[in-house]
Amino acid sequence: MPSDHPQRATEAFFGRRKGKALSARQADGMRTVYPQYRLDLERPPPADPRQLFPVDIAAIRLEIGFGGGEHFLHRAAAEPGTGFIGVEPFVNGMAKCVAALAAAPRPNVKLHDDDATRLLDWLPAGSIDRIDLLYPDPWPKKKHWKRRFVSPRNLDRMAHVLRSGGQFCFASDIDSYVNWTLLHCRAHPALDWQANTAADWRLPFAGWPGTRYEAKALREGRTPAYLTFRRA
Image (tube, rainbow, N blue to C red; front, side):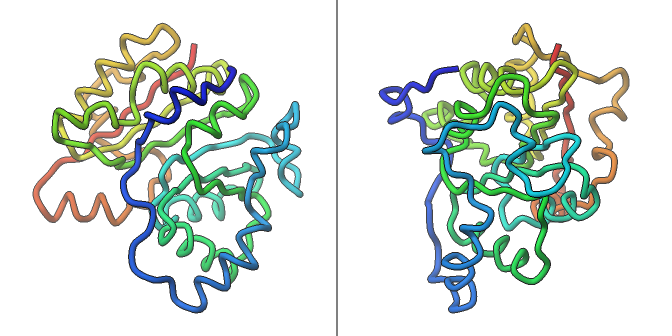
């Protein structure tokens, strides 16, 4: 899928880029460790993105907006034969993830600190086995709904890079965004919702370690939903 830079200028699916000042350790990690994991989107992607990793990889998973990287790194440690690509534009979240990688390196990890749409436009067709979008910013105000990452254009992007039979997994505790995602994904010809009973969307994904966003939702009385869509 060719990139569309004129339209990209209006695509802002994330909020602020930076919070409080990084600690000296975090700043050092971003300077010395992050380049070891960073994807260079100025270079053409390999025909087989498994070649991006210095170890043998059988499949590739992409997590969009991983926060501090807790879930992302848990999955990468649990599945060393899977390549994990993580996207997080928020500098402080990326710095937290990089600090963890400095302490426990993961050769099956690659990182991108900018807009996820750039990465989706860069990746070859059918190259990703699973995409996770977990507790994304719901942009609750109607005037901001255009910033929600789930949109017809981004679903096209995800369907383009997912292999046939690949999965798009979405989790949120915001009912309006869950309904929004269901409506958009069920209207997409390449995505099939994998749910037969309520347990299929009320129970977390297999191997789910929990996240701090989920814990906050449960403390505040909100019930998360876990949606899985299969790429036709």
